[in-house]
Image (cartoon, rainbow, N blue to C red; front, side, top):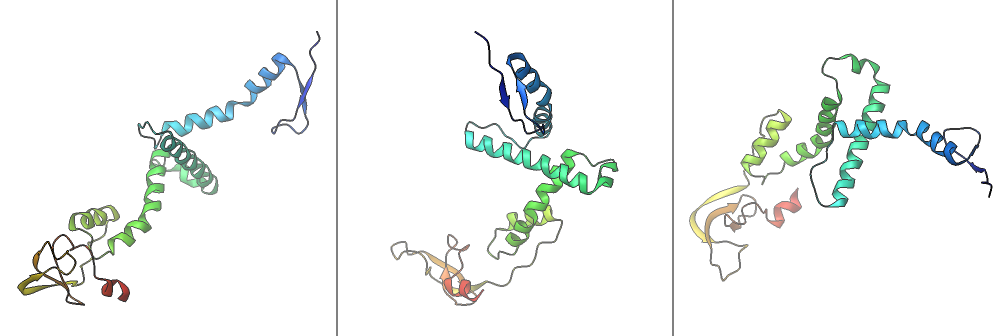
Length: 184
């Protein structure tokens, strides 16, 4: 029985090529180099962590491919960048990551109720000083019941919101009263 020739349109060729048996394998092997090179470059500096969850692994692969594509586009639009001594893929990924998280960290640093260690760490990452908190609490002279706790707890506190003067305990210290949230 004689094999039929199969006409397969390939993206890299302007005209369809007649492919038979070994010719098909040969053509595939000649044109697959770009994919292998791309995969190799993506895995040389990877964002992936060891995980057993396949959706997370796919997400890491998307991040790797996106980072490599971003570097290729950046290198093509800024050819002088490659000439620097420290300009390699690892440095590019670090700078890309910082550029992506900086707006979120700056916004997060403005949150008045953020804990001090977290505020300090964010300021350290952004290389800025920790902004001073507005006075959002008042120390009461007499301990009173927390306005946010259920009555059964009967939790006493000496802290109150500076704006509405409602008392709150240490458990609710990070929560602002609704009056304060509506004013901002």
